[in-house]
Image (cartoon, rainbow, N blue to C red; front, side, top):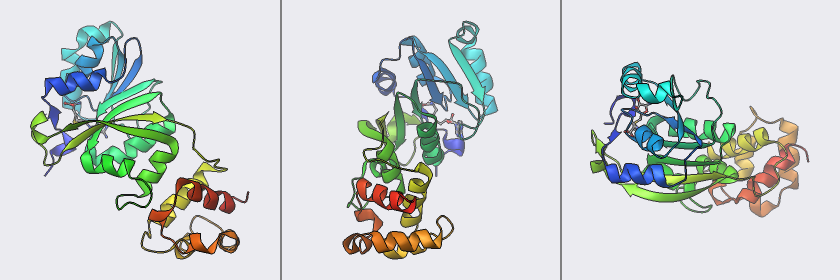
Length: 257
Ligand SMILES: C[S@@+](CC[C@H](N)C(=O)[O-])C[C@H]1O[C@@H](n2cnc3c(N)ncnc32)[C@H](O)[C@@H]1O
């Protein structure tokens, strides 16, 4: 079982140094989600970052405010008490975090929507593997397609349970996420997100059948027009076998362009 609020704190100082040092944070505005007891926060501040830290646990916020009173007074650290899935987040350039794993997906999508220059984030290893899974491989899913459409992801570090207290039952990966423009033109990003969601919510169905389950998202007429226009070979495949270009093609047809 994982700890409440995913509170597995880093105790591996070498790993902390590496995570804080993968990108140059000196003089930059860095968002940290879930600072916990502040081990990574301290490393980021020591490297000259200005840190905005969002923590959900009021007891930890209180501890951090005492431990970092000087840095807060100097304006180098702002602690926000709230849920990173929805709290207002001030402008930042870089994100660095040992994420709460149960909300990894929501937080990753939120960060990609807000936009940033580069992020160094820690995930449960299986989750990170799904993020980088290429089309046609077993781990590919909605997460892989959406993340790879808007960013490139590079694994940087693999950590075992011994790097944390209490020890989790899973391994962790630290990855670098660098946002980019989609590799293929997307007429309407909401339609694209809906296509990916609808098709992967029936991942064993063919594209033809999957699209027809999407009546909550698309007009029936648009679905039938798209099916009539798409090549038969594509309609017979499953979403896990589609390339990013093919998802864009389907979405652009549904969006009417
Ligand atoms: C895996 S721990 C990391 C703590 C610290 N950064 C470290 O590496 O030792 C995750 C932290 O995120 C906090 N947290 C959990 N859910 C959160 C949420 N929705 N928004 C903000 N913080 C959250 C937890 O209270 C905990 O401090």
